[in-house]
Image 1 (spheres, helix red, strand yellow):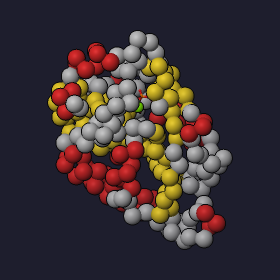
Image 2 (cartoon, helix red, strand yellow):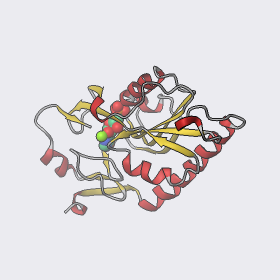
Image 3 (cartoon, protein in one colour):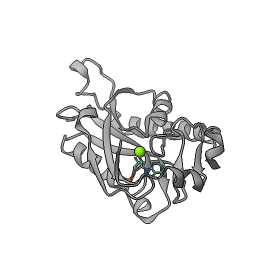
Length: 210
Ligand code: IMP
Ligand code: MG
């Protein structure tokens, strides 16, 4: 059973919901200030007058967060998924991050678009740095970043990011979209796993994880 694998609950579903609501209000306020007076030039067909945002969620860990967040953003939006593979052991640090082209839905150009990248957790910063590089090449009007979690380790704390929902201890966490070997994403709370669970399922070698 999944529940017996949990060591402790770090952030409850209620606390997540409250914070997501707060951050959504912040994003909306900033976006409205930032774009006030602007008319969107990038909308499909250019038919809409209101400014819009392009969300770029990084698969797979951000899906639950994004699902909750977007319903709290009263902004005209498009969603462009990006998929990144990290070659890593399940709990070891990222060695190398690669864009998975076949699962990525970015247009050739993002000229004129206000882009918000969304990831589940900021750890070494490699993933976000790589996605930012890719997006900057597409010339967006603005580029902001939002993460659900940020680990309390120097690489993450020193990485510049616009919105952070929670800082968490430098431990391996799962739930609310975050996985261990692709499991546990459906846990409603953000939790740590019992060490026995992690050791029992640790892969023998490096592997690819989206
Ligand atoms: P970074 O590239 O090192 O910042 O790592 C970010 C990616 O690694 C995230 O998108 C997650 O998929 C994964 N990751 C890092 N730490 C954890 C964790 O504690 N639990 C689950 N996934 C994690
Ligand atoms: Mg992941």
